[in-house]
Image (tube, rainbow, N blue to C red; front, side, top):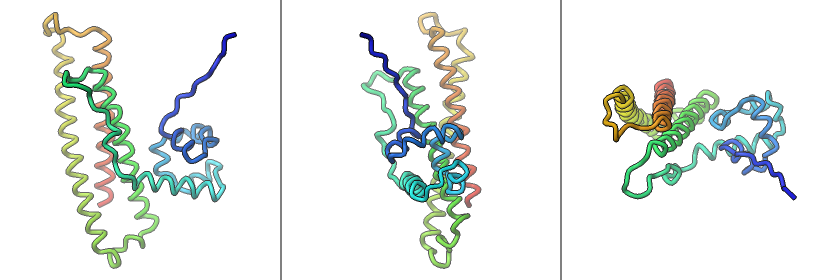
Length: 210
């Protein structure tokens, strides 16, 4: 007897909702094309529009979103190459893809802070939180400096990838990559461009914030 099984692939959104025992809401978020990055910026009013009006459910979701933004960054979430033989193109694609997700979530956190300032300005009134506001300003400057460094590294990587692509006709025969590898290289360029755009979004949010 052949047993037929269906498998579902869960992303960050699905894992997040199931972890809160709210897996039944997955179809609702999918219907409204809400990604995990979108969820990290969601408000109670938007949940209402989606038909999620139960007060308890809203509190659970919004509290969990806040916890995600406050969570310490885990270095183990970024893949590292094994051994000392370097990395292959497909491994570089995975690494950049993961970084793209990280940058997207970072942008969501910046937007979350900005929206909190707009919605609850009294929580960061400079007259009551002078030191905290100054610290936040200094930390924002640190983020901007880090993002500038990221942009510089990405521009260098993008330039090198373009050079490799354009000079493929003069590469020695023993170093010519096969079509599969070429496609992966193109995928790397696309990922770099996506990551650069996401990084730019972080910068824009930071500049808008201060």
